Length: 55
Image (cartoon, rainbow, N blue to C red; front, side):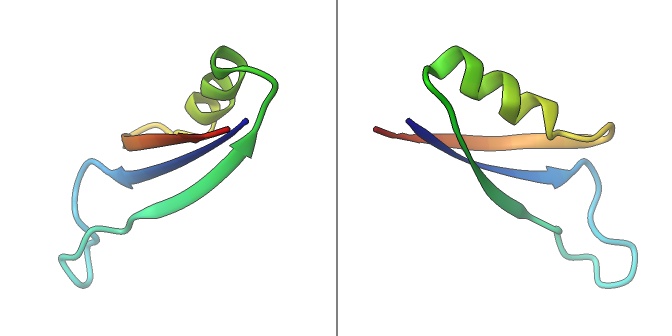
């Protein structure tokens, strides 16, 4: 399964005032292990915006 995710910092970008949104994907055997990978890529001070699961 593939899990697509997006994250952003808690505050807007200092220079532009825009949100810096990063999107990425992880591949895993099951949802739980995939979400562990996703959560592991969220740095301190960032928020997980959402996930989408693709079989």
